[in-house]
Length: 403
Image 1 (tube, rainbow, N blue to C red):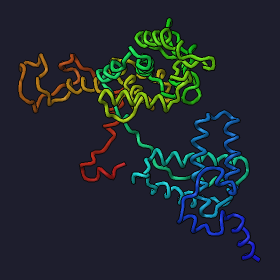
Image 2: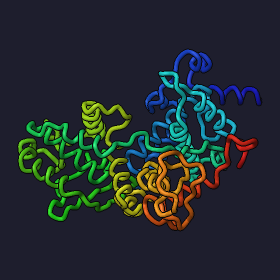
Image 3: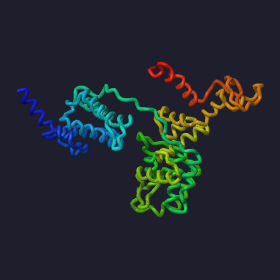
Image 4: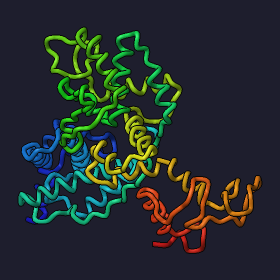
């Protein structure tokens, strides 16, 4: 009887008569239509419906649908069709599968990409547990990789930004529109999704203000926009937008040649094209202007909390990554305090030296090239120095195995 029941259960759960051949011969599609026979798909649909009801953004739901769909396709190849069939060892096996997966060019998935496929599963199984579809959450205690705190991949100098802006042929309609879009990106640091969604009534040229509605995290924020950006937006609104507008437009600020709104992907493509025309081969497009906006303001003395408000970061930790890219203040401290500098500090009674110095020291109260130094550092510098002090030298014996 036990054998017959087990055989019947396998037949009900199996996607085909030969699941092993399916797993080896071809990859099962992650689309819901291809996995409609699997009961996990119905639980997935109910989960996404619940997310929409409680207010999750469509982009978040779409990303989670893709990640969970890939897991269901993997589970379907192994005749796993019910939430009760998924255990922690199975999820750990899938996690290893994600780790060993290779893209079309042979490169492995980044840690962020791996987390993008695993974290939605944790949210899904947490919901299944709360809805009493399963007795316990098998994904609750998964050991996940730590997301690396990587620096922005590219940083444009002020000269490079100006070169890209001046590369727009403003005598042509597309050049005028592109100049206005780039000026808004650089002046406000908005994301490409936020730029594409701007409406006519979101820009207040007289006050120099820009309203970002339903940005990342479904949050609104009011940010300043510079005078130069306002001037170019005003020129675009007066000379070009009335010609592009049609009766069906939805009051988008920037319209394409057909009178419709831009998609975020189209905005990124246009910005990338202008970067290439300026001879800039750094990866990224709109995000380069976001990084440049934050970094250039930090280097000119802006407070990091103002930058946090400008960029719309929920946590200050997210904004502090830009302090590591800003070198102006750090170079000033380095040249004033590091002993191996070209000239001695003025007023030390030794006079200037044109050769390298080995014993020259600058104390906490010693005057250096940038004036008297104090024990106080600016907040970004203090954070960076504290982080360096906490690190162990990996070149020393035992350093690589330190905590």
